[in-house]
Image 1 (cartoon, rainbow over the protein chains, first blue to last red):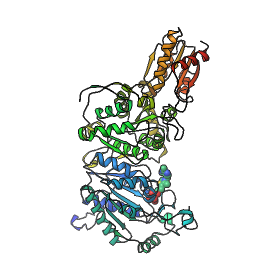
Image 2 (image 1 turned 135 degrees about the vertical axis):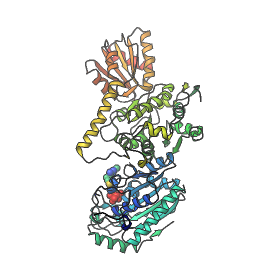
Image 3 (image 1 turned 90 degrees about the vertical axis):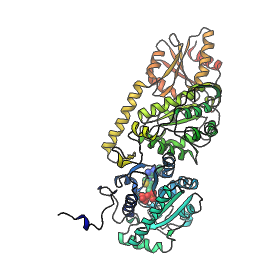
Image 4 (image 1 turned 180 degrees about the vertical axis):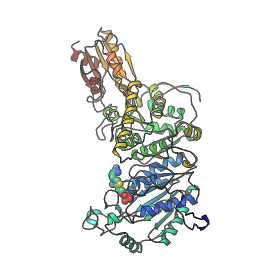
Length: 246
Length: 361
Ligand SMILES: Cc1ncc(C[n+]2csc(CCOP(=O)(O)OP(=O)(O)O)c2C)c(N)n1
């Protein structure tokens, strides 16, 4: 069957590869990859971008988005990005990091890179757990949430409070744009795309560090179906400030 | 900038040599006895002359991963530290080896373990040459024993690192870093342009994947054991070639040596004086100074020890290089250790006495 290109109303982002994604059904990483590929394609950045991957479920992101990638060690993406951006100032440099990666083992690197106002975009995927290693508690795990390493629910006595890393980043003079986004509904997806585009634009214009947090699902880690996970996250989002934070 | 004769500290000479070699980036965190490296770089402001990036960063962990990022884009990147900081870098060094990236790491050793002392030591030999981090890897390890070598080894290290796509280390110690000597600084050469890098190093990430063919990622992860083994074998093959071709050593009065002293870095300087003293007494001492600690100059050592009845391995540690000395001579010759620990340093006379006592000279 031949398709008349005039009839095409929707197509896969040009920069998304044909490789089958390894993500679990309902995982937000897949949707966020698609948004990222879309925005990079739309902004014509394929020849001008270096992505810094991180350690977590998204470690194979270089198999899915067809641009130049550097795989950073766990938590160190902002340090890697600092050097790449300083030495290649004409390129758009961004990191893609999970909440274990950025808010736990890599807290030092993100705080200092953002505080220096490095010209990078930080894409922060906050799914409240360590997905890749089996759903353990993360610094972002909300109080009361059960995980394999807090089986009775996170409590302050044992685990302390969830770390509001994104809010902390808004306080640093080096950040120029901080936004909290989601991909649970089409409306959110459209909003998230806009935020990502804005972040990349800032980076190209050398305005400082831009941060786009995606509150995300981890069906396997949360032990929920994709529908349940989306509903749970939508409910939780009502208690969070969404959209532009700075 | 032309070649220039100066009087300066080893740390300062290394910093000047880095600028003159056309290094693209230095990332570091202060620690004694090597802080003059970053201080000299900052004072020289090379970002105004060569365009070199120099950053004081939040930790040695960040510094080594910044080196990784810069190296991934084909730039000549370096860092420097001492024991406590070099220990923190081990994970990053392993990643650099895993991703086959070239760079220079300078360790100006101090006494340990722990916070230890700021006095000179050679106790990080094992860490440098036996793979301080995880996985099977090696670092091309140069041991300078003069301020001149602190300057000269910058180019030797970077040239090797880029030829072999693997990190190199300059393993100095507090004495070499802090002492002042005459040094001939090399003439300056320009940094490579982005086009030259793209041409010379096709593996380098340049963010322009769509306008060229070739690799578009720098990574060390591989879950297929067969592929991973293959990659490891290729790396080991590279190391075997280096072992065959790249070892360096300096031999002094070894042809007729009855007892051969083996020592590197600052210890070798003291041993050179000990050999002079012994010869004045009519004792046939000789000195072999490994210049590369990995690859270890085993063939040079065997040749130097041909007529020796004993080898005295003199180190500012509890006996680390002695393992490689014994392996080199296949334990056919008696090999003994003489050392001082934790920042204490021996005198030439003490070394002569040790040789006399141990080998009944
Ligand atoms: C130094 C180090 N410690 C631990 C690990 C194991 N590890 C791999 S991924 C991961 C957690 C990732 O969680 P997160 O960043 O939230 O990403 P997600 O998988 O949820 O997307 C851990 C602990 C590692 N690779 N390196």
